[in-house]
Image (cartoon, rainbow, N blue to C red; front, side, top):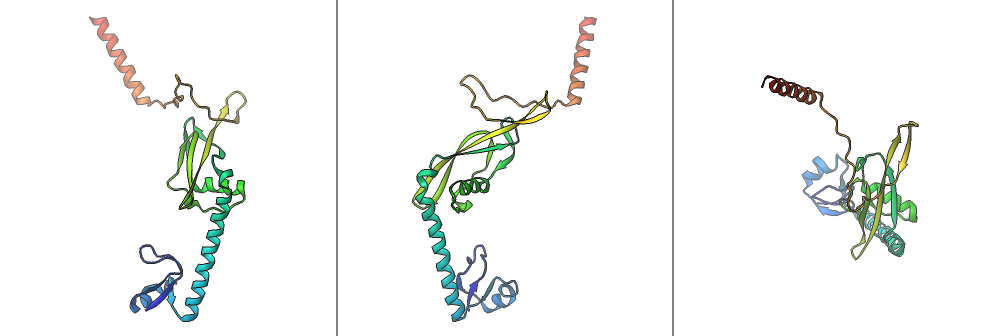
Length: 198
């Protein structure tokens, strides 16, 4: 029996897809959950029109992005976030990056143009955008961290600076375990007492 899927069912069908299914599957699961409806001639025509419109809109979005690919290429996006010197408290996601690009260039890209990109550290990160199957561009995401001025007690923003050749990123302060400190003090006392006896 032919049905039209009203939503994507992973591994089975995508939204607005027309497929043959068993009558009992439609009756017991798809229809009660609003996932699919029987495909009449009218519904099939409407579905085809919807899919054509979606493809047209998607194509227009891609064409708009491709038209601006020279401007987008190697564009620098700045983020200022809370971090522990190097490691961010919350990662910068694909959605965060795409929102910045869309607002900067007045386009409407989907977050799917960036794949598997979560930025978790400061400094500069090159990110690849797949605008279409044949068009990819790179952008630079610069991440700066927030630091606190102890004298004035105010929070300020500090740009991330690349370490020089002989320098390393500053190590975050490690929290000392009080039990470990006590054990070390006891060991030192025992060693001193042994030295005095000897």
